[in-house]
Image 1 (cartoon, rainbow, N blue to C red):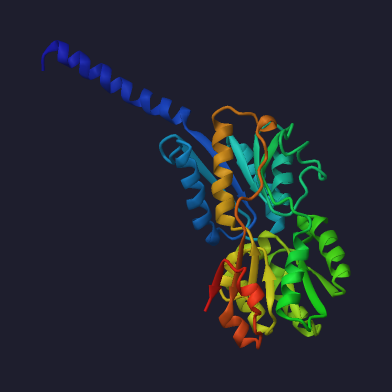
Image 2 (cartoon, rainbow, N blue to C red; image 1 turned 90 degrees about the vertical axis):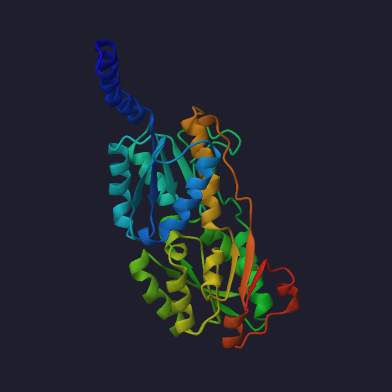
Length: 324
């Protein structure tokens, strides 16, 4: 090898580790704090990657996803948030109010993208306003306090003789939904049996209790506890032979009676867009919070038939999807 070529080779070889180190330094880290089952994360993370790629970020190229799933155990939320802070992530995507509060406690400086279907973000103090959050947190919020009335109205329309409903509520999601559903129940002259569900470990027992209370139906308020494993949840409600409704469309697709609300997968895709803007330098205090962009009414007619329910055409005409 000639002397000049040898020198070029040595210089290039020396530059390789420096370039690799520089690329590693430039790579951004996004922490995802998920209070559900890790087994249900795959489609959510895939949607999040799609959202990132649309904004110019690609995993293993210029961004790294650091995943923390609590497996439905609320006692693991805070330790998981601390783990993300210790990994020095550039932004934390926190799913649920409990995850948002844990992320805030773990770090006062790391920007937080909330995917929160349960809070009133302004009334709870998470943000100052939707247009100008004013702090460490922005995100996608399901800020529709009257939505619980829609679930009860759908059940009443589908089952005219409905008088008594079991309402499953995760206390970790806060009081907003509970206030809304109690007000709606009074307005519709429905008797509500409130059952607290503190994590996935209590889910099956709560539904069995509902089955013994002589209720006509079950309403499951929004919570990662009810959104993380739709097949299991549908099986539990069918096991006690009760029609049930929840926010998450996959519940009805998996065999539950009815769902009306937003897709968690779409929420992750929407949240990725906000995370990319933060990585690009926008402060969360100046990044407007968003509302979900799509709502779906999904009815499982096969399940309805098995439960002896004839869904009226007034509901069928409004449905986005019918499972037959």
